[in-house]
Image 1 (tube, rainbow, N blue to C red):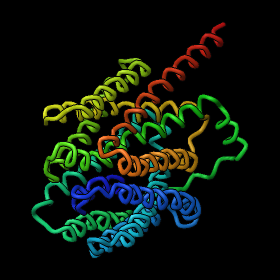
Image 2 (cartoon, rainbow, N blue to C red):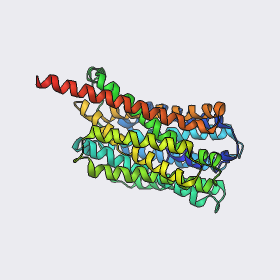
Image 3 (cartoon, one colour):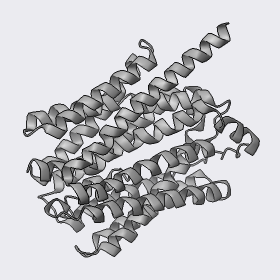
Image 4 (cartoon, rainbow, N blue to C red):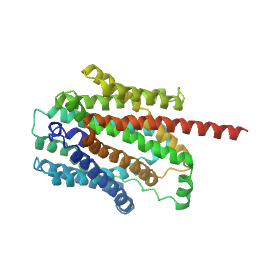
Length: 371
């Protein structure tokens, strides 16, 4: 929900009525800076304070930040930027603690855990978009933000009542980490993960503004369309869980990339709601299987699972994604709102090419082992 907050709240902040796209890009970059800084903070706090304490601190910080944003002036760019930096920090700390907490289940089944995490991730994003859409005309912006702030506040109370903490895994040896990261396929998978995260969040961050300014739909309707995007991601990942054992993973990845590319083409040129709905469904369902399968492939490349290492990998991926979302603001300021879809479209094509390269390399490696 915290990751999806900015993409959902922008229409409520009135940015569908302006062309201050570079300012929106700065918001995403501020959130990104907070996320990245919290990566180092969580590595220091987790061994000293434990997972439960860090989860509680992250939720309290998120709750306080959202309450602060509720009282920010409608034109308070500096106030909002500082608030989003703190919100990114709370998200990063929460992210690191969660990676530590899921260690046992990830070691048991990496693919299923990655897919389940993706389902919950999409469900939280869907809940955020529906919450803002459903309250858009019923409440003021401060009231909406205070309502959202209640959610991390309740989680902070819940984490305080958890009786037992989870042991924090030790950091891996530097020599083992360097050895693993020097693998060309590991580097390729890391790049693909970053590009795919950029693709998904480029859509989630800008879809509502794109639809209001490109097609003239109401802000509430654009947020419901954003909910449709997140809903298709969730349903697609549930379906992917069912077909993973029956379909070759490489084939499933390529089908997803082709479907997403088709969806972007439809969204770019459509001028009606049917085209919007079909384009969103193609993009969401196309993106759905890519993340869990990439997580599985990354898991297969390392001889151990270390949550600190994985948190770093995924933080870099999310940081790259949010930088791309911020860059869309500068692109839109120069070439118009229609250009924001060019970023995820180009990213989807790059992901497709990289997946083909990984597939070819894996085939060559398998042939060499057989010979």
